[in-house]
Length: 183
Image 1: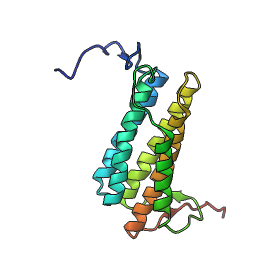
Image 2: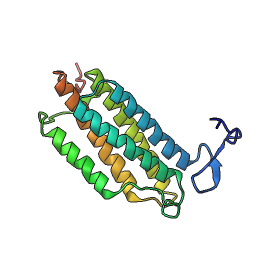
Image 3: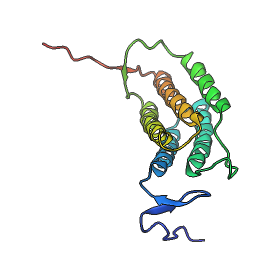
Image 4: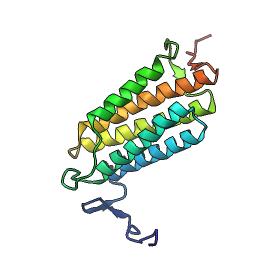
């Protein structure tokens, strides 16, 4: 089987179980950004995360694949596509609580910096926020499960906490944002 089909050479692509749409449609933007996020998590995992963080990121990568498939299918219930559910959102919340318990309280804004592992997670967090915005934009014009936005919102929070945990594990403090003062 060849990897190229030439069917997208005119700037359109086929949805799973649905019509062909332009490659810049809001649906393609949404699941394309989720795919980018998944790749960023792969990069974060390659940055030598601790085993407990790597296991969480691997699980999330699998869940993001499901989320992307749901976005790629205009009628996921009709096509029997697996779906992200509230239990997965709750699992993200449990992970946030677990990792946050080992961190010093956050008392100010911090910059997305620190150890390499933390920087990779911060980058993934910003891509996650963009994916969330793309899904919100799509939900404004097409019916979507509200769980998709909830999942991405919680995931960005988890990535923030994991970045802080990576800095903490590396013995590197979070980098506080310094308000510029007038002289």
